[in-house]
Length: 349
Ligand code: MRU
Image 1 (cartoon, rainbow, N blue to C red):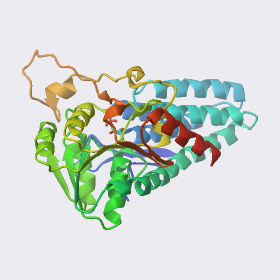
Image 2 (cartoon, rainbow, N blue to C red):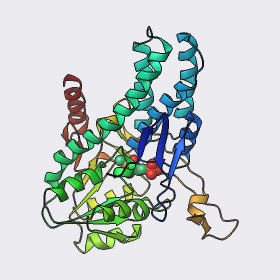
Image 3 (cartoon, rainbow, N blue to C red):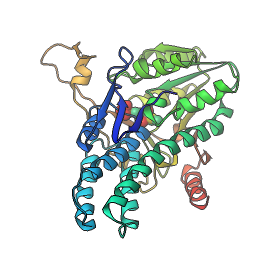
Image 4 (cartoon, rainbow, N blue to C red):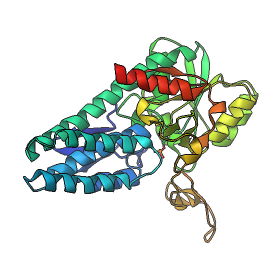
């Protein structure tokens, strides 16, 4: 199985997603600053993967704190957590993971610093394994929506590379494929960072799942022709009413799906829900370097001196979403009710 990130011998090892598909290289981090920069610079990306990286980064940073005084340790750890929180603003899994690690040390604050350090390492590793399990459960819950012979459009990369393994949207597609259903994936290339062309196409091809690449502006054409049966995407943050932020361009795909009466599914773990936000208009949208637009794979494609805009995410309104697939079950409209019920059922398990 493809390993996006792992804890190895007191270090954090990540596949460098900026180099894929041409080079399969790995980055080894020995400090939390290295992990924070890897998140910021897209060595690792995708909401759940960012959360796991942050947890491992915090565990790594904790090992470097030289004190046996718990209060000093907690103060320094807090600073490390704040650095992690500054990396990327949209995917809520990042903040979920940071809060989780903070709460863990806070509940165990009467333990020795050495013991707290060990607890943080094992929790970060647990988060990775649990994420893979969560994705598998999502796969089982979502594969019913894929029929034998279907063509599925996916956008960005919501696969093994975006998670601890297996993937959210691609996890559902993988589950359907493994169950014997014949299917084909249309991967939209996903400008400007090309997660679809570089990452989704790469990992599906590696797994022998039929994948065909299309440019983002071909989606309407293929929908109109009746070539797409359903859309399956991941999410970076889902508000209480079901509005969801995902890679820039997802809103356009959802709008086209609505016009053409094509079901639009979102697969995301409970950790991607942010029920503290009433609607998607409150989701912070990351602005990235305009160079990602003026250049493709480091090569300038726009004239010198031309400015560009680069919002990294957009918000799809809940009315365009057919269902939200989670590890706890499937939410349908009204999402405010069904999402809350799924969160409650998770707490009671
Ligand atoms: O900027 P990225 O590559 O981190 O954006 C990733 C996405 O938008 C994914 O679709 C989303 O995180 C879901 S991944 C399971």
